[in-house]
Amino acid sequence: MRRAVALGHDVMNVLKIACVNPVWHYKINVGLLQVGDPADLIVVKNLQDFTV
Image (cartoon, rainbow, N blue to C red):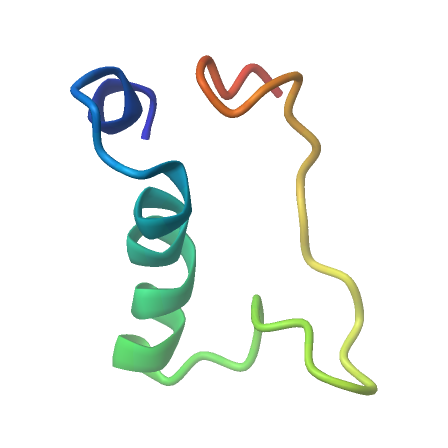
């Protein structure tokens, strides 16, 4: 994700491609934060370096 953002791609599109699309594609029951779901997340310092 760091490299894609550095190349000028929109950070929200990069996050969707890396986080949401695999959940939909593989039909896994995590990562969408819908009502009643447990939180499944990480915290990063900023959306350029993605340092956890």
